[in-house]
Image (spheres, rainbow, N blue to C red):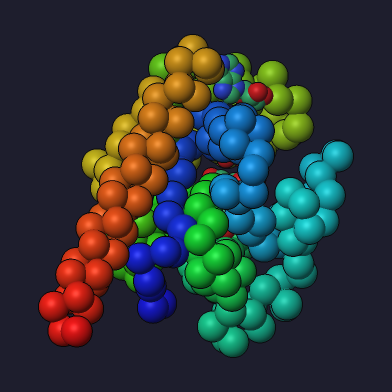
Length: 213
Ligand SMILES: Nc1ncnc2c1ncn2[C@@H]1O[C@H](COP(=O)(O)OP(=O)(O)OP(=O)(O)O)[C@@H](O)[C@H]1O
Ligand SMILES: Nc1nc2c(ncn2[C@@H]2O[C@H](COP(=O)(O)O)[C@@H](O)[C@H]2O)c(=O)[nH]1
């Protein structure tokens, strides 16, 4: 991907299922609803949960269509998670960043690794629950998955968490408002750093042009 200094920032947010990453991203976007931030809507072969809307929560695809898109190189990253395919559309991410909009990817560690390789300047944040007991409670309180699905996700939680050290930030999501404030701090600090870099580039360019003239 080519970048300019005016590109949006790319944030990777990963966590074991149920740790609260979607809730934190959603709450952050509600606080910054000026169009400067977006969450990427992934494609998945998972069946929709009650209340999930195609194109809003996910783009729900059949396995054949998903595999065709893999062959067409249409995904920025993709992975098989809990026996279903999940992937991020390449075109949407590139176009959104080029418009100067910050993008949040709510993805697993395998996808995070692919994104980091393709776009090393992405900031990555790993979210963990305060305990495995709390994680299970959250999966149950969400009330959207069967006991079997919850057991499968709990069984894979520790394997997902073993990748925490690959991320720039680790956030323990205990008290929600406190986690949201920390999450927001990470995001705004990154924005500020990039804006500062951009104004330094602009100043250098101005000097260069003035001296050339
Ligand atoms: N700090 C918190 N305290 C209590 N409950 C929380 C907290 N954060 C999130 N939750 C609740 O935990 C449940 C799981 O959260 P959420 O769906 O955001 O997790 P997730 O990491 O996005 O999961 P998945 O990867 O399966 O999409 C939700 O019911 C949410 O309201
Ligand atoms: N690598 C990717 N992982 C993704 C993507 N979209 C979601 N996910 C991860 O899958 C699990 C399960 O999600 P759920 O909605 O079924 O609970 C979770 O960890 C998500 O972060 C994606 O595009 N790529």
